[in-house]
Every structure is written in C-alpha cells, then in structure tokens.
View 1 (tube, one colour):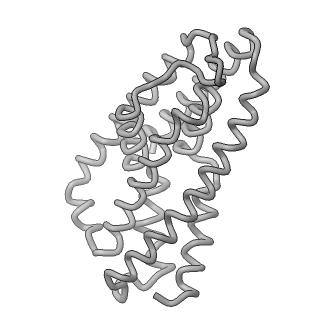
View 2 (cartoon, rainbow, N blue to C red; view 1 turned 135 degrees about the horizontal axis):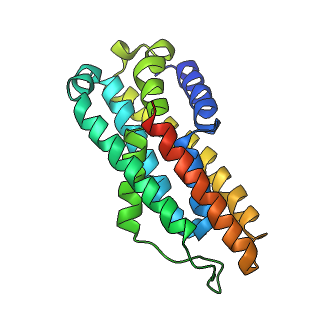
Amino acid sequence: MDLSALVVFGLALAVAAGSPGPSLAALVARVIAHGWREVLPFAAAMWVGEALWLTLAVFGLAALAEAFHWAFVVVKYCGVAYLLWLAWRMWRAPVAVNADGRGPAGGAVAIFFAGIAVTLGNPKIMLFYLALLPALVDLEAVSPIGWLELTATMLVVLAAVDLGYIWLAARARRLFRSPRAMRLANRACAGIMGAAAGAIASR
C-alpha cells in the first residue's frame, strides 16, 4: 500500500483509539482495580476484535455484518452484562492487595472473551471501520498484502495507545495503598465500568 495512506489511517486510528470511550474506560478501570498484568488479555482481545472489524471492512463483508446485525446485538449485550457484573464485583471487592501490587486475580480466558465482546459490540469502533475507514482508504484497491499492512499498522497504533494508558493507570494505582483508598478506587472503577456498560447499551 501507499505509505501516505497507511500514515493517514494510522493517525486517524490513533485519534479514535486515544479518545475516551467505553472500551478504554473499561481498560483503565481494570488496571486501577486489579493491576496491569490482569488487563493484558483484555487489551489483546480488544486488538483482535478491531482486527476483525478491519477485515470485515477491507473484504467487503460489511453487508454480511449488517445481515447478521442481530448477532452483534447479542454480543453487545453480552459485553454489557459482563461489564455490569465486573462493576458489581469491583464494588464489593476486598481491599487486600498482593505483595506485587496486584488485586484479586481473574481468569485470563474470561477476561479475553470479555474484551472481545466489548470490542465487537462497541458502536464507536464499528463506525470507525465500517463508515470512516472507506473515506480514508480506497478499500476496493486493497490487496491481501495491503490488508496485512493495514493490520500491522493497526496493531502498532493500538498497542502504543493502549499500553500508554495501561502504564499511566498503573502509576495512578500506586497512590491507592491504604484499605480506605483501595475501597474508594474500587468503587470509582465500578462506577466507570457501569457507565461504560451504559454507554454501549444506549447506542
């Protein structure tokens, strides 16, 4: 692909990925509540989900996604339900922190599928790939090699943005060491997670 097209795509994606949204809010909330290690499967799932949306757009499968709209609605509400469940767990979470700074551990597989559900059901991400991307890149001229280049660009941009937020959230987490501070942090994160679920459900 033309380098300028990849640069335009990368810059637009960086702006979209870096702007506040339900997925990013859920990511930051999990880091603050449980530490950065537990959130890595969630971040990886977000990247896989975005790669799927990119693939649908590049290979002209947007009509297929529209035809199976009900399936994405189901996925969306599964993601909403999981976020609400996580918010409830955070609200009631014990305030103990492990010696390495981590909160109570969660299952990596469950966290990964939660990230997939949140990403596939996030209207902001859908609109970027199915509505905005065709205005940035001539999708009819994208070859399989071009798809690989777009996917690689996407992964680099998302990793830079999301890992940056994870790093900042992990540093902020160090401020919450006392039981009272941890309880306040857990409940604030529960509120953020619940708001993220509401944002996804209402669109």
